[in-house]
Image 1: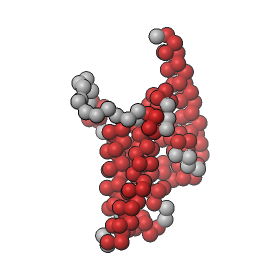
Image 2 (image 1 turned 45 degrees about the horizontal axis):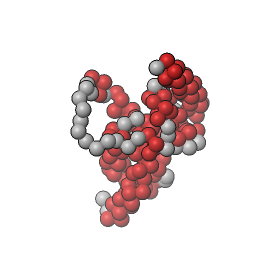
Image 3 (image 1 turned 90 degrees about the horizontal axis):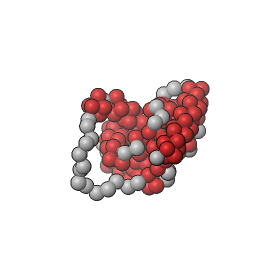
Image 4 (image 1 turned 90 degrees about the vertical axis):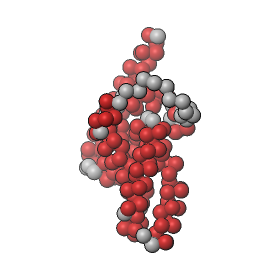
Amino acid sequence: MRAGDEAGFREFARERALPLRRTAFLLCGDWHLAEDLVQVALIKLHRVWPKVARTGPVDNYARQVLLRCWLDERRRPWRRNERRDGVVPEEPQPDAADAGISGDLLRALAGVPPKQRAAVVLRYCADLPVAEVAKALRCSEGTVRSQTARGLEALRAELKRLEAAERSV
């Protein structure tokens, strides 16, 4: 890679790493996994940087790569089989308020199916128009609208379920 391209990538990564991390956190709900996802996405982006930087808006492509990394991570069977029953001595994770979202809403988001959650997060948390979300999800705009509507419905149901659980405690 040429020096100018390398400098451009470094500047992009420096400016966009935190917003990408926030988006990743909203998708997965785990700060450590969010950092890993952003790192993998930036590595993949670095491989094609000269081409991407010349062709158009890099932010959209970076979000699409991040989303694909998250969906790929969810498909890995070892993640589902991992047992987390011990306490790892490390620094505490930042709470959900650092992502600009309430803890209740974050817990409810965790109960929404992945593609619906991606549509809701990209539409309402990242504030992207339907066309850009469709491009990121590689689907039609109508699919984005229906996934978003179903995601919001699932989110409302999950919030009601969490409220009922809190009241019963």
